[in-house]
Image (cartoon, rainbow, N blue to C red; front, top):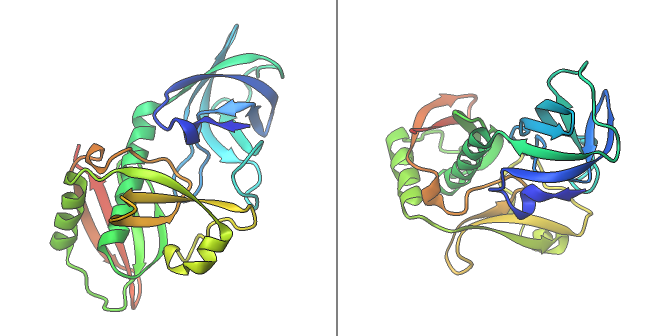
Length: 244
């Protein structure tokens, strides 16, 4: 399967062919739909063909233990009793773009949050309206107003956002790249995707990530730090929201 959201994260529609369709979901030869993973929800949208249209309520990986690749993306129909397209059927895909774009903006914001807040990330979740990261903060004290100001300064600076591909050996040489304790990047495939915010010469944030992101931080728009919650002796949950 070709993962079109890797090549063109801003594409909204595409053509594909059905490989299989059953109660577990629909497999395609190529897809725009991002499957839930790394804290980012799966895409929703429609799959249409001559004589039928299906609302897709979720997109998931078929095998949670396997790295995202090839044929492990399932498109889950909203109505599980609706007729399904037969294998070999050409279909038109359309994602719910506004929802996906908000996820892209929020996911990139969480990477910027990692650049602002010290400590390891113990958990997180991307949402269309609000998102969160949990940090193991040895000092235990965080300033809400200061974090919000620094986040918005990084956004307004309009830093470039790009992928970098490295091998497992590079991650072994630089274990500091992995900030998230709860989700480790898949190993054993030989290559890993890193998200770079900034430039190679002056990186703002660099860490493994397979999600979808905006092309520049200015595309995020202003954000607010909604609250900082105490989730343990050193664990602090930071909740952020898009202002528009």
